[in-house]
Length: 352
Image (tube, rainbow, N blue to C red; front, top):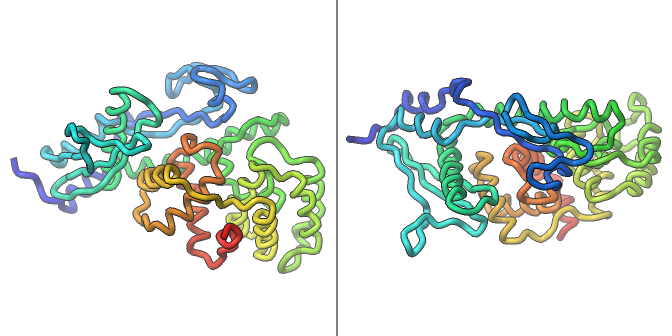
């Protein structure tokens, strides 16, 4: 059987949305305390439920991501090219697919005469099932390069942020101080500098909130306001690692939303850099993991300087590399991209 040649019709067929019956629901626990409690356990602030959506016995502190499985991807590829094939990028001396040091698998997927790369991993699992999961993940990732399920990536990105934002509202109304969904934290733009300084978990001291209210937004002059610099004392008193992470990730979005002036943003950047530079040496393991995340998130620009810069920021931004999902990385990478493309290199300069 001769392999077909890629045409506009085949490309369009690959990109067709999946039927709702083919789309599954992947649960994602957003509460770090629940994740740290161990398999099948929950933290004291949440309860274990039988979820009607994903059918799992799981903490109620979770959301759902749409996904298509290995079988659905295979079926789509067979529909357009019965001769499609994949091969590992590297082999072991025994002739088996070679996994990288992170347990990931690089593959080449060929469909209708076109070959594209993909990367998959088993998210820390071991044994034969882990190999099968890495292969399936790599196929999904490579097929996405052909447009297969591409609409789900964007939809997941939006719904992830929307769902996490809704989940934290009841806790705020009840005055609880529980862990927030990581993606909601990284997407939150904040209404002013106090929001930019708000920790990922818990609330800042009362003094920091009181200082933040001291400046009426309606009367702010152009540039840094007279009351902004003194407010840094209150911010500094509340600075923890979580505060620093939240602050740095919200500076640029706050400027874009006109919640911070450029001068105020510069003050915050100086404060963060002076207290604890966010950039740290990038280990080879972190760099390799970033390559896999960059590939999964659909980024094609893999220049070493950009990857190094992003990796160093990520290294100081997330508590654990294993806890960084693709959707969270896309949010983070979009923020870092603004720093890379923009004229401001203060963060890089502070770490030099």
